[in-house]
Image (tube, rainbow, N blue to C red; front, side, top):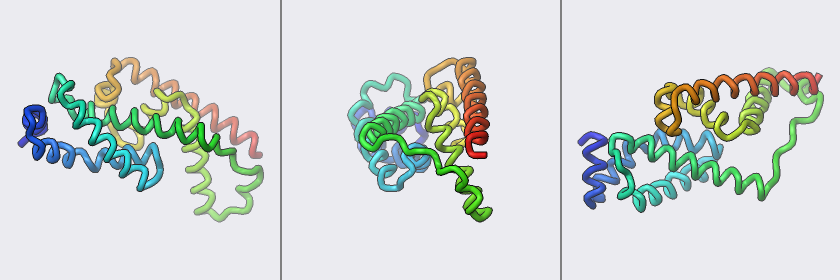
Length: 179
């Protein structure tokens, strides 16, 4: 059964079809959740919660062909809510101490660069962060991102351009402050 048929059957009350639909998207959902939440348990919990939400709201889905992007959008909204809860609860993590780079091996230095980049991405506006993560972490095309975020392709291109420019400026600024 293809994706559309599974969704149609699930909307008619076929729980087995809904299970197969979720199973088809499970790996992608996990990768996206892990990108946002950076923790296996939190990512699995996100999938569980999003599966429940999707099941409860399945009757509202008008276009079965967009069920995959609808599911991912629910997941992204859930992850954004969880990140906001974390930041309110835990506060923001501070930047690495000045001069730390000189004490690191090359592997540790690469890890630090990755942490700095991820930190810079986290500080972007939510729309820009979503576009960067979907494009570069999940290899979605501009068209797929536009469909997922329910925005015109031109808007996605603009957000991507602005996000990359913002990252460049932030990383240059951070680089100067560590020298």
